[in-house]
Image (cartoon, rainbow, N blue to C red; front, side, top):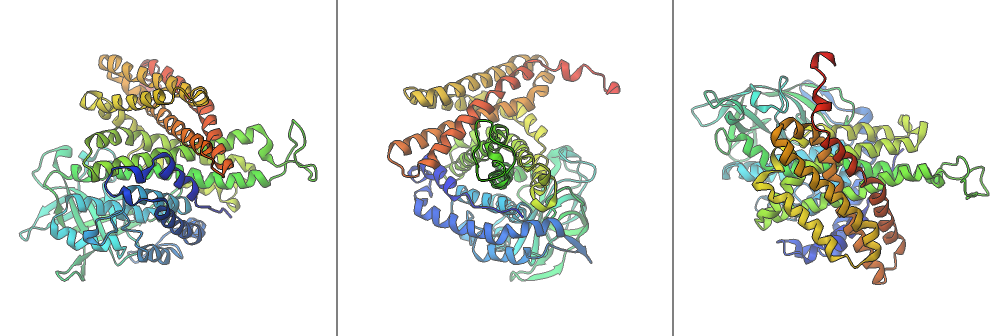
Length: 592
């Protein structure tokens, strides 16, 4: 059976030695002293390891069941959800005015990572509730916020997001769900939504659905979409639950993974709903929380890589097979542990460098979300908006790849259910698909984000890389192993961006055909920057007499591996981008 050890030391290293959060002028960060964050992380880690992780296999094997319109979650999920609710974890970074604890989003990200590594399917219920609450907090009326937020923050109620319909996914302009205005100001919502995570469950007393629908005679396409709050049970004026609303679960999807999360077909048969925000501005309301939601999915990518790596590492240390070609390492045994073999070590270091580099990238992203929200920092908002499709697309692709590598480390054992590795692979796969497929992320990056405000954000990113290299140019070890590779990779990214600016304007297909490679090229450079910063922090710690030399040395060596073995992929991605659209578009559709 798999195990999970919360990576508290790694998280603390990022928070206090790399990001140096308590020194930041972001409002609320002065509270993030090491003792405080350590206490929070230790407690979250205990819940992750002792409560959630043991339910991961249970959820996968049992799945969810639909009985008489009610979804039953796997054994233990309801009690685990109550544990998180009672501990205040649901509202950790939420508005204190409505019962939240008001902590920075960064801290919620760190605790959410451990919950997701321990049990991704379970954590989705928590994450979706948080997302629904965020949208209501930003766009709901005072009455709506007072009605729903305290219950969502406390975990008494859960929340969902309803976008997709049977005939349309990404192209939401095609949705058919209707919202008929009523004399009392409410709307009657009719239509069907599919792939609704947590759409029906037994974890809370009510489910708050946020539903995209069209009001008759509105504009065509996405300009005619509005957002509505549609509770499973109507809420009385005193806050108590009233009649059952006309929204039901019509079925559960049979899925490759995340079996412990209910993925529902939702039928709205004249259900009562209320407009959230402005009429016909539903997409704007929904996308308010998109940076947060997509960052959470990026987190899922490396979080599954982390737990898969931990278990692959344990196996590699214990499994005896073959002898080290340079000399026996286990003379008292029949063979050496497989971790002595170069190819196994390559495999493990690929996993480790992605998990730890991805964590740094996502935490940096969370600091930008905090800065944009707490300090109204427009530059931070522009930067995170640029990087979100990179983080989501790159880290979920690489995270899935890492789980496959972890499975490979176990050989035949990795293909069996007994060891649990195949579940990590199956669960990680969805992160590449939902919250906008990774192909859509790459199109968003190149088609929208790259040229926004005249390319101001990406130019700021290049300047950030350049400044870090210049500041540390006198550090010979850092320069040779980290700065020079980062500089070369950054030049590849700049060349690719310039290609899009020139050839992309001549033939848009040139940009679109290269967008996926650009997303990965950018992801490698951003992760390379994170590794360079982590290496510098580790160097500083060792120079200042840190006693845990093994920890800091491992950081430097893992980063050096990434810079030498992963970062050079930027040249491959650049070559693919510069090949243009012809290799992709020349073959006639009929000849495929």
